[in-house]
Image 1: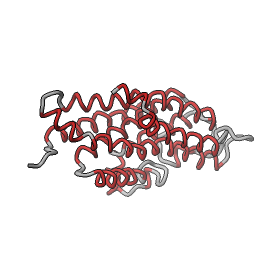
Image 2: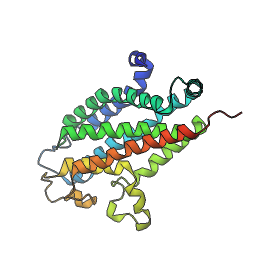
Image 3: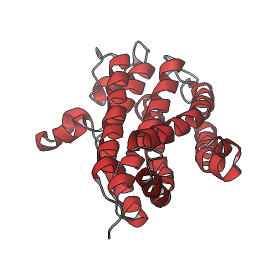
Image 4: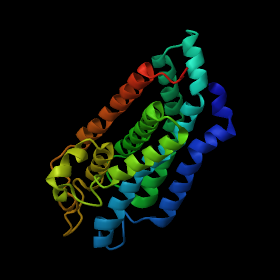
Length: 256
């Protein structure tokens, strides 16, 4: 409800981690994107790719904080739905819109401070949009997990496990070209991969990194389109949303 926007507990749970990580990242990586004397091996191959990695990973892990609201409201949802006050699509749509409204200014603050504090390159708009979409995909993913998890404990166990598994396929820990053929299928259904690739292309496309071919090292196609990767990322939002809707529509949460 609109009262949530004036609730300190509600806003604190959605602002606190973003502000904390923003301050830590900026203070730790201040100016690393524009080091004196030009790009170095550390700045090109380690520092900036790692910052971009954290930018896409943090919202995915932070999504765990959104699951309890859906699960704690489950008795109310069951009662109100049974009384015909609203259906699944209206309830779920309201929840994601409510979170989206909060995420817009928060993500804008987070990305602008990081962009100028660290010394990023490329499009600030794409940097912000990628973080915004990734954060909201994480929220919808949390709702999907909450939709099928029997208890809060089960949901809190499954979501971090799934996100941690996705980390191996983002592209930083092991380049795409080095992933074994029997695991490559999973890299294609990992939304964090497309977010990170979009940010990598946005940062290093057309940038002089000296003798360090950053994109080739991490198997990010130099001729790829950063906006296309952003588009691939966006596809996961309706997929997770529809999956959550389908589960909530058919599952019976009350056992007699």
